[in-house]
Image 1 (tube, rainbow, N blue to C red):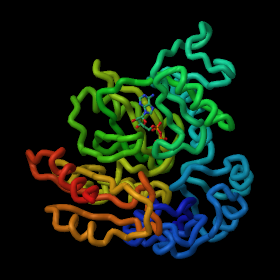
Image 2 (image 1 turned 90 degrees about the vertical axis):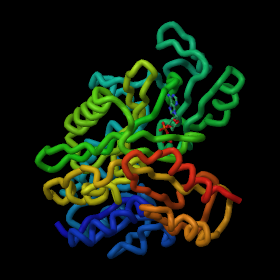
Image 3 (image 1 turned 180 degrees about the vertical axis):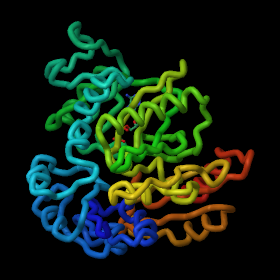
Length: 380
Ligand code: ADP
């Protein structure tokens, strides 16, 4: 297969460019705006909203297989296309239990995988009492999430008391919600896993992710956890990809509790921010792996090429149209650093504008490396 359709034209599609070139693959991208990062690297573009299935039908005429960099699709409308022999990888059946956060939690629970305690808000009644007898009991703080279309913490609300609950519910009046226990995690972990057409699964080294205001700030690879915890995380990833019969790459986020328990927080049915380090630090990047999987090629090695890596997101800290060239020039000389800039036309607070991966030498202090990058990027 030589022509791959990608639904979504953000940075995840943009970062597929190098691998596409290496594998001799053309990317045709469906994305709403000419300004989107992947427009410049695509062989062709279908300019349309992500959930425009008519546009996806057009995309299908131009490629052999369609994959996703954004899961905010209209699954029902797409399934009419799948019936007409359009090949989606991962399949729409694999996406189906994942696009709604409540359904995702139910899927995990039914598989017997550990998740935070949860309930759909309808089930606790419109007054959303967190303490009803017939549903799991919750006490503050609790977490409210919009069931669909949440990303980068948008749609996730940590609610500390009844007053906050009231105002958050008012704010989210129009949305279906998931209510879950707040997990006082010790750390957050993530795994990137790939599954091929033949059912081969590879899992990348487990990483630690650090979020601030619910947005990923930095990733440490590999995570400094025991062999047993890494094995738990990997086993969950394998179970999930096998059970969903995935063809492609998934990012899975976890909470690690103080007593060493691993809970699944979220499954992203695509490449993921926690796997950006693989571009420079691994034998095969997550983006090459996705193309390999969806094109029916054997998977590549996920092994690391350096003893460790730090990935720091360059998040917007103001509203502007700057391309921050000066800041990027200051970052570039950092030893063993790779600076990525997504070329977005607009910066907003918390928006992912780029990232830096630094390959570490043995024994190098990862927090120091992250701090050095962040002190350049966030200095005024
Ligand atoms: P998104 O889909 O926007 O990435 P997530 O559900 O992954 O939203 O939440 C973003 C972040 O919010 C998590 O990485 C974590 O730091 C925090 N968070 C989410 N759910 C919980 C929870 N149940 N308990 C504690 N923190 C949470």
